Image 1 (spheres, one colour):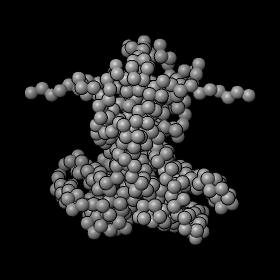
Image 2: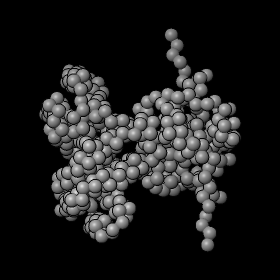
Image 3: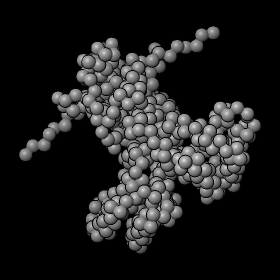
Image 4: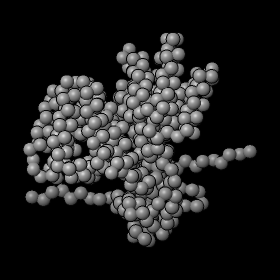
Length: 231
Length: 231
């Protein structure tokens, strides 16, 4: 007859109040939060409940605590959210194919979007990045520029949601990019193929041609797939 | 000469221990966690620190507390992560174009992936879903089947990372899908166009043809863009 009453935790109610204040604009990026003591009196809850809520908000990267200054809504969320995805990944077992598929899902259409929005300055940065990638000898350095090339393309999309999503999965992708390069480069002629693919992606972006950019990205990812998943 | 020492919060250290145990397989999905009291003694930290860590893990949807039974690692993470993305979105101001772009990024390539992995049973469910979408009269009901159609395609990708990402942004997309339908349907002939587009997506999936499926999805999203962003 009755259904179970779901108890809402105190910290959930606190978080809900934060969310409401963010939604209606009372709290904005960079804002200083009231002190723990003020929050205790304003919200009428215990100090430990306030701490739980603040910890949770810190953990997901929304609030930062500056020593001696108090708690602030973060200005930028580039560091947030990494861990939840990583935890999901770990709890579900490491499956390289899933990471690869996720990479394709994000990167192919993001290249198309970037082609529409990229600025001249960003194109220069990408060119510089590719030059470095081709010039440096050390493979570890190369990996660094390879990652930067891909990340900067996503950045050129100017979409904060996409960037956040990419950041959320970047720890998965980072290790993947480095490992993927290694496997592909076990076949020496692939070095020039990889280089050409990166250049084709850049070409699509320079022409601001979404179709060329996304097709080149897709072919690039096909090569990665061939050497990393299929075999 | 010295660089500032970054203090690691106690709850961060606790979270790190959880992560390590998840990474090495000591903690698995569905596992019961030790009681708060046991955690206090095993970790040598205060009860309030344990509570902070557990709250943070609950908030991001990794741990659930079952009344009278204790705390458990969640079996399924479909409900997790929604809020962080929503908060980011709210803190950055509502920009429909960004949500739309994110939708395109996720859905176009996910349709291609689903075409490769969809089962006969899933195809039947999608057909059923489209039938309902076309049969029901009530627009609110239609919205429900429209959302389900798109969500089930993502599910057919069988990629837990993609699904989690979609769940993370679903609260953004949900309101968007309903609003987008409304705007498109202000032009009556669009009703049959929408219907045909959904059927074309389904056709690509039935043929297990990634190119057809992703192209149809892309055209579908173009229509949405035209009526919701451009104007």
